[in-house]
Image 1 (cartoon, rainbow, N blue to C red):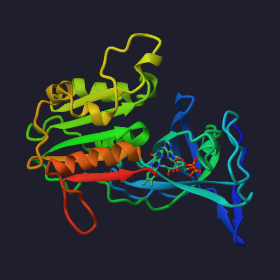
Image 2: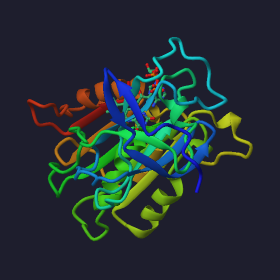
Image 3: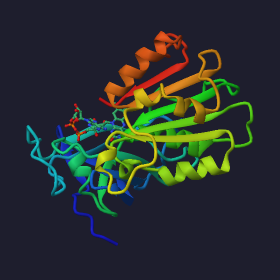
Image 4: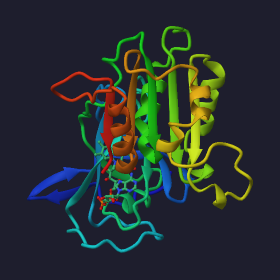
Length: 285
Ligand SMILES: Cc1cc2nc3c(=O)[nH]c(=O)nc-3n(C[C@H](O)[C@H](O)[C@H](O)COP(=O)(O)OP(=O)(O)OC[C@H]3O[C@@H](n4cnc5c(N)ncnc54)[C@H](O)[C@@H]3O)c2cc1C
């Protein structure tokens, strides 16, 4: 067992805050993409709906990973740096929660998260929240889950919790964009789901095929352009019509805004707190 490098408590505004969770697994997808599993330490994880997010935090004194860049403002040592992260694990798993995280080299929190090891402590919110969920989508409509980068995380939770291969009335598609093939986290799990479920389709697209060490035989370009391609239309196997389809967008705001305006022009309506809709949006920044 590795020794925890962080103190267990921090003092914030005169109050002692406990680092209430422990890293129980880390998988480095690439030097700047991390799958982190976190276990609560001495308390029970809350119930949550797939698609929701938790808040993770580390104190300013936590070390940054060695390949990060300096942050613009050095935080107070005892101040918790808090950020939202979509949960990637199934809501049925109550032992741990999993996150899929991109390194922002000059960021406040991610360089500190990338320095964590198995056994390291961190803080996690004791309630999870968010409206970016699939639960209210009618069972009989088709669903397209579109993401760039770590925007895939909430979909992993949805699929791991409730993908039903035996529901012939609903087709589910994941469209995932990343820069390189090695940035396509969860690719093998999603490919396996596709092999096992005839009503599930997984499609991935990379934007920098020229940087691949081997010839990339799949689609290339940006998600928003790939969406309009005959190649995607053929592999979807159904027409993403507003009357019969709900679409989810998550990740890079550039992709989200571009896709949202195209889809709204085609008749999709954004779901908000006040109005129901068939276009569900989560922006990461
Ligand atoms: C609801 C919600 C869920 C989120 N879920 C995830 C998640 O599952 N995985 C994840 O990696 N991030 C997620 N984020 C983003 C996350 O909260 C942080 O903003 C991000 O990790 C950067 O934190 P930082 O302190 O290192 O950078 P900061 O010091 O806060 O710098 C912020 C800047 O970093 C850039 N940035 C932020 N997020 C990203 C990103 N994902 N990729 C590239 N550049 C980025 C933007 O330019 C932003 O202005 C989510 C955000 C929200 C609002």
